[in-house]
Length: 211
Image (tube, rainbow, N blue to C red; front, side):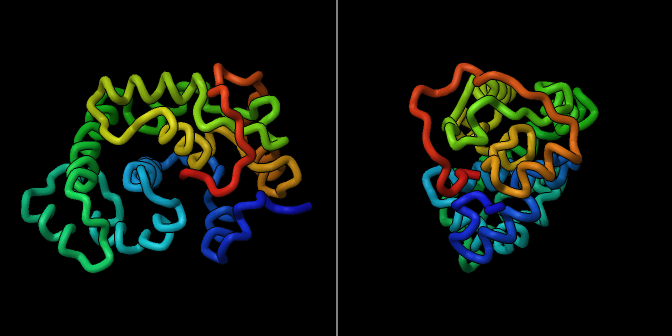
């Protein structure tokens, strides 16, 4: 059995694929880290996100959302002056604002994970055709979640970004059918099998995941 084709790009990609991508996340700190990486990735390569991940962790206090939500202008300056950090003030401010929105969802639902996983009744979705490589860039589920998060104030949170997040945090199992991770997830976690959900017309074979 082989791995998903993109997992062979670099050792860093392989480690991320084997130990993180698609494994269900039920910890709010980790979920915020994954979501923030999606936000920062917009317009850039995912490989760059993995390469700079430790810099992001340093800049954003290991993605502790309560600390980030309380950041001041001095923190914005500190982050932007960090060597190797992305020089996008808009994205840095979006991370801070998203942390504040994240707190509000936690206050309403108990945890962000509870809020998000309610969309799939706590189960990982395996869509018909996806394991064979017919993977879309977005679908009806990512549309619905994106719309709701935007209403709640989140930024850099379009449907394509959200679809990638659902793949990364294990709500959708988009590993290839001959990948050991595909079967491992289906065996060890609650799974539901569904038909494609109003998916984007352009279907693509997955190369490197957007998130």
